Length: 314
Image (cartoon, rainbow, N blue to C red):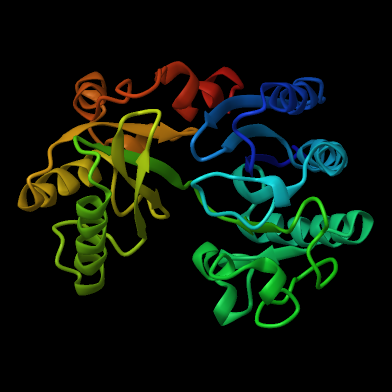
């Protein structure tokens, strides 16, 4: 029987210490049957997204090595950055790719989390499809208040202790389909107006008044000093409902009412072509419209997951 092949997109609350990031990358590079497909570093967010592809058991094994390293190298209490977080190994989603169902992967992930929660005294909070608690379904709910104030009270860890780990904090874990982390650049540094635009987009989503389904899109406005602009930061949880191109065009149209133009966009991590555009004949034209090179280099061979899967015969 062929072994299950999965993606793991581990979000680490560190985007400034090059030595620590290189040490983590070397752990991934040295792992058997695991490919570090992409690394996305955000200085202002102080966050790095590592995209791993590999067999399920091997992904679990290398994550344990990273946890062991992080316990010695990090302290979440010293973290400063614009991105919300509750821990060093902040968010760890697992995505089934080949030869494993979402249901089977969920069972495997629950067993893995029980082990690391116990072995490393690390609180694990399930979200999304793994969570059975109504108040712990989304990352926003998990990050609403200080972890020290909520864990063991209004928030309950699913594995591990009911107090934060002194260095690592806690980790949020789920099993999901492909998700897009996609930021749209606004040609302004006015955060107040940018937040008003983000709120308007949220209201369109609630009222279902958009030409495309925004129900599975999260919106947040922030200012990125290193880019010299504000962004509408989005997470797209259903790429069947909306593509990056369609989302860009919606934000572009709605921004006109705020006298804001767009200046390109930024893909964090990787995406399948299907999540970028349905137009397979004009993909390069779509990439040009989205201006994915506007604030940092974009290389489709490295960030479009289809190329990796083809190279691996998947």
